[in-house]
Length: 520
Image (cartoon, rainbow, N blue to C red; front, side, top):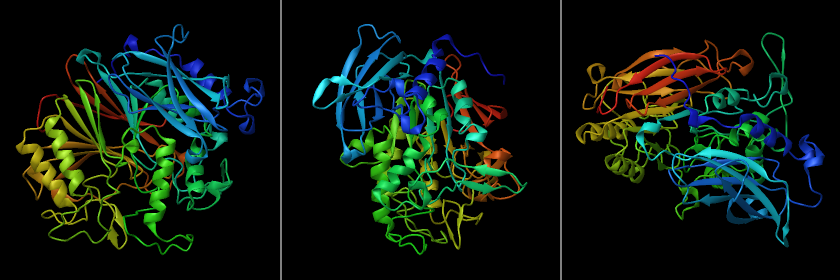
């Protein structure tokens, strides 16, 4: 199916936003000092918007010193008659980061915003404003929805390489002018130090930008914060953040590889062995560096549902916080599973309440791909093609619920495994058959090592319709194999089209799904 033209409402000022993000970078990071007002707060890490709905959104910024966050919004970039929002006081307690919620916004409209940082002792003294834009979700179905997704950034020692143009994949994603970006986890690799150079198999040298916090595994709060700041050194990412809002979830590398609650590390690189301590520090830094609505609630949870108009609900899962310990995953009963009972009941309840045409289940790990944590299992599938065991029992319960409640339009999206693929799950080929057929699409990495395709588990009958992956492990981004996915929902027909794309935007695979069906 050919790519339909971008609607006129999707036009944005890409050039001016990229220039704004680049020029706002602090002098210490290479920006022009003419844009800094001496002694006034600056926002050199750019801006982000997140968890945007029909009438609201979150705006994020980081200051270089204590400051009051002020946000102004306008229907145009001229900012005539702007609406002003007074945000929090930014200080050391949040690493000088802050988020302001915007409410009462018009639906389906381009919102231009600028962030001002004011001296707490003299509100008239403000730094140079930093601008951004986002579209609110449409209230009417005919407007359609387009978004992109991927995951896995700066993994396996492959960081920001200026000789290759840094994180170039963000330019390709931004060129599609998506309504939002779904990041499926592994936003950082807190357990993956980055060195200045890496020798490539063909004799070339990979060169990284390096920082003190990325020189070792992250253990302290300051080191976790530094991991999130590291990615914001990339101008492609900052420009993308300024024009595309995000929906962010987490997985394991925000803390440590393959972690689970209660784990005690044996890794000799760590002086802090208690994973619960590391996870608490990582969660705090995660909440400081992304605009996520639920992290500011008393329960501070990652899982949530984002309503993006009548066409789409996005169900963001947390397959990390509530899981049981990694094991052979072959137990005949498993009430806790990978989601925990409370999150599973939440998901079932929210799916049954949803009236959206499409219900995207954003999972940070795949269902039917075997992801090992030798000698144990890290994800859901354990390689036994028979009846559900271990964590598969929760997935079977959920799939049965979707079938018997006649919940239409479910699609699974994930990243995690560092290749791209499309799996069609069919009860006619499965050991467990009490479900309707569905699709799972895998994309990523954004900028990390690429790996061969994982083995499939036959319990839910997956058929790997498409895959692109290297044949050797940890292939560097210099050799390609960096991927993202696109979802395009047509406002007239309601059809949902998934395109799996390479780093430069080349389409590798396309699948169109029909609305109003329980399974397909």
